Length: 373
Image (cartoon, rainbow, N blue to C red; front, side, top):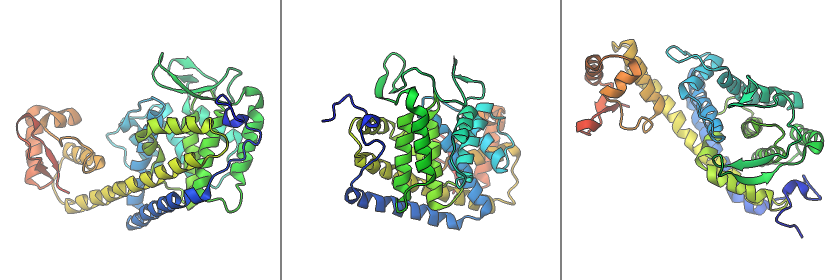
C-alpha cells in the first residue's frame, strides 16, 4: 500500500504513467474542438495580422508565465521585446531588460524550433537565459547547470506562509532522471495523442524540478513546444500560461494531488485538457480583436491623427473590447502621452469628432471614452 508520504517518483514503476482513456475521451474531444476552432479563425489573418496576433499572445504568455511564479513583468517591456524579435514596430515602447529578452527568446526558441531535439544543453541555455545576472531576485543561483544537493521542495504562498506541494527527486539521481525524460520527449511512443503527451511532459518535468529556479517557466515552455509539435505550427495562437494563471490555485492543488496519488494521472490529464480547451477558446477573442484592430485602421487610414492620438488608440485597441477598464479619460490620456490637461482634453474631443472614440455614457468623474469598433 502506498503511504501519504510516498511521492510519485518513488513508485516502483516510475515513470510509467497510467490513465483511463475512457474518462479522457470527452474532455479530449472538447480540447480538440476548441483547438480546431482557433486554428480555423487564424486562417482569416494575413501574414502581418498573424504576427500581430502571435505578438499579443506571446506578450501575454511572457507576463503570465512569470506571474505564476510571483514575478511581475512590465507588459510594455515584454511587448517591446516581442516586437523586436518578430520584426514588428516597437516605437514608443521601452527598451526591455535583458531578463525579459531572455524569457522571450526561450519562448520563441521552444516554438519556432519545435522540430529540433530537446537536449540537456538546450535546457541549460534556456534556464541561464532566464537569469542573465546569475540572480533570482536578490539571491544568487546556479544557472546553466542542475541544482545542488539541497532538498528541492515545490512551494507556493508568501514568505513565512509557504505551502509545500511536493518534494522533487534527490540530486544524486537527477542526471539519470533527466536523461530518461529527454529520451521519452524526443521519441514519444507512436499513437500517443499530442495533447496528452503535452500534459505528461509538463507533469514529468515539473516533478523533476532539475534547476534551482525557473522550473515552472521551463515546464510551460516545454509544454508550448509539445503543443507546437502537435499542431505542426511554430506560431502559438493560444497561451496556456495565461489560463494556468487564471486557475493558479487549482493548478497547485492538482499538482499536489497527483504527486501523492501514484502513477494514475487521469485526474491531472483531465485538468490539463480542460485548460487547453479554455485557453484556445480565450484565444479566439484575441484573434477577433486583431481583425477588429485591422478594420479600425482601414477605416481611419486617411484620418488626420497626431502621434499621441495614434499611441492612445493603439493602446485601447491592444487592450481589446473589455481590457481598458472605464475607457480613456483626460487623466489617463495625460498619463499615457505626458501632455497637459488642456491638450489631452482637446485631442480626446478631436477623436470623438473623427468617430474614433465615443463616450462611455458614464458622467461625472467616471466620464470616459471608448473605441468605436
